[in-house]
Image (tube, rainbow, N blue to C red; front, side, top):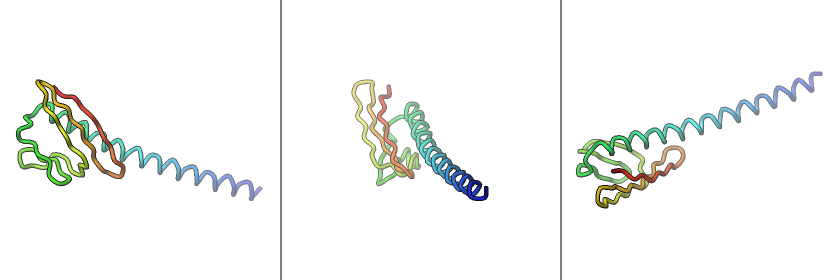
Length: 100
């Protein structure tokens, strides 16, 4: 009886730890995705003339817009703006957008 209880408790602890790790990973990914989506909304509403990419920072009008940026490329074509962006939090998250 004690052996069975010990096995059940050990597997319960292992299961709980795995759930905690997965939730932590999901939290970090979703925070990064929210950072990217808020940046996208900001860029849709503002002029690209004040935007610059320096090192790992995306700067707008001499103010930090987004940090830990590993890739930022944009191309203006007529009324469309094509953006390719990656950020590094605990995991790297990349997005491609087309803004007008």
